[in-house]
Amino acid sequence: MAAASARVDLDGKPIKPMQICMIGAGGFIGSHLCEKVLAETPHKILALDVYNDKIKHLLEGDNASFTERIQFHRINIKHDSRLEGLIKMSDLVINLAAICTPADYNTRPLDTIYSNFIDALPVVKYCSENNKRLIHFSTCEVYGKTIGSFLPKDSPLREDPAYYILKEDESPCIFGSIEKQRWSYACAKQLIERLIYAEGAENGLEFTIVRPFNWIGPRMDFIPGIDGPSEGVPRVLACFSNALLRREPLKLVDGGQSQRTFIYIKDAIEAVMLMIENPARANGHIFNVGNPNNEVTVRQLAEMMSEIYAKVSGDAALQSPTMDISSKEFYGEGYDDSDKRIPDMTIINRQLGWNPKTSLWDLLESTLTYQHRTYAEAIKKVIAKPTVS
Ligand code: NAD
Ligand code: UDP
Image 1 (spheres, rainbow, N blue to C red):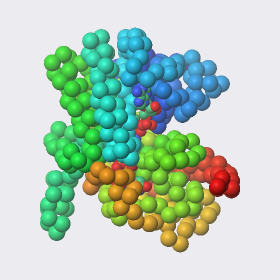
Image 2: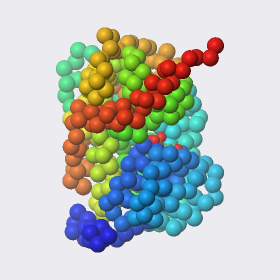
Image 3: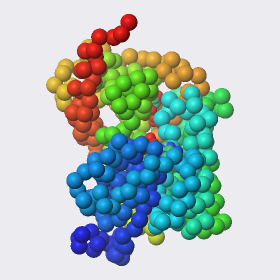
């Protein structure tokens, strides 16, 4: 542990070991953050979640230096009186808990709004009242649509970054109408951001807000019918992985024209570690965390994933690897989309000197290798089973 306790922050000051209360620790981002904290720091984790499948290897593994420093509490923060006590015992609170799959936003808008706003309220309140530092996970979706998307299709201004780059301290939040319930998530996240910001301004809450831009990698979401509900619709990485594993065409919603920048989870976790260990540089800031160099349309993503999966699995790609589907058919009434999401990196660069490293090709190759190794056999068995009539 000598090496770990000699850790210094970006200003050369020693980093004191801390107790972190991580809410939503059992999810995709939480599982990677727990791994990193346990492997590279002396910090302890109080891991709160309703599930722990994705962190079981850390809770029950044979690495005592891990198991001694992580304690799992099966807690639903909606209704559990233990929450305040666990926050009081900690030096830092990280809140990741949320409903955050787009298929839920228009079909379960009430659960989405409660989860992303109402359920986060006590966390903010307990942090503020007990002078605990809070790192809260918001989303790039608070930006909504770009200004450029409202320009005429042939306007040359669409090519001007001023009309599409998303800046934490300048860009407006542009959502669709109330009937477009897709925006229930973005709107709830925006309001909790505003509340946290106001707690900072009026009551001195020490906070950092993270806006992830499509973080992807192993353990993201679930494969329907294998480790999640058969009818469930996860985010695009798992939807496309599921189709590739089953040798079915990848479904392109409304032609797959929307653009996204994807970042490898391991790069993004480096940014969060810098926030954790550099409070003087991170407090009071909202940070975009994404990879502006990894932009593709969803159609290009599908084509790239098909090519890479053929390479890692050894199976030839399908003759017709994609098919078009309307958003109404895929997601139901009330879906809408962000057209383009490129993060401005000025603030995170200036405050934390952080930059993403991994190219889209490389991150998809390692992620699809993981998906193939983890799920290919299970999918084969499900496909081979005769269906009950
Ligand atoms: P995830 O669904 O894998 O993780 C969320 C975790 O929170 C889950 O394990 C879930 O069980 C837990 N949780 C939800 N409600 C809870 C409750 N009431 N009590 C206790 N635990 C609860 O999602 P993720 O991708 O890890 O995202 C984490 C955070 O980052 C979320 O706030 C999400 O909005 C935000 N985010 C992520 C991305 C991304 O690219 N992955 C993008 C934008 C925003
Ligand atoms: N998408 C798609 N096919 C799928 C799943 C998603 O075309 O099987 C599209 C979706 O409409 C959106 C993009 O992929 O334009 C990214 O979707 P995701 O669910 O990952 O979340 P988002 O980036 O919209 O928050």
